[in-house]
Image 1 (spheres, rainbow, N blue to C red):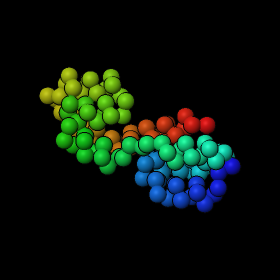
Image 2: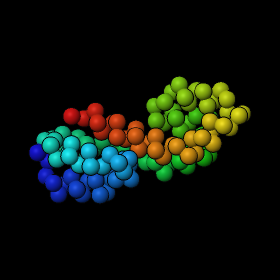
Image 3: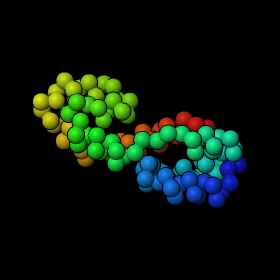
Image 4: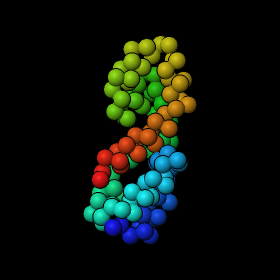
Amino acid sequence: MAAKDKVDSYLMVNQKYYPAERIPYLKEKFYNMSESQFELVACTELKDPVVLLIVSLFLGSLGIDRFMLGNIGYGILKLLFCWLFIFTVIDWFIIMKKTREYNFQKISLIS
């Protein structure tokens, strides 16, 4: 079992990377992990929602933000219809939430 103080410290430092409503679930999951599994979680590279928002603001019409999240299909769609800007504007409002969900899914795969 992972030490509770390590888990609490990790979540305090990295809470901006996860959806706020999922923090209690992650805390419980991390408490029940072995030390080696938790070390794997602590070493996992997470996407910063603020960085993705900045990328979305400047390069979002080219789909770069979605390519960074692994949404290749949606990134291509944005690239093909970049002249409309509708997908870009929509992403300005949802990209941070999508980034946090991406990080949550990435961590959820570690069991």
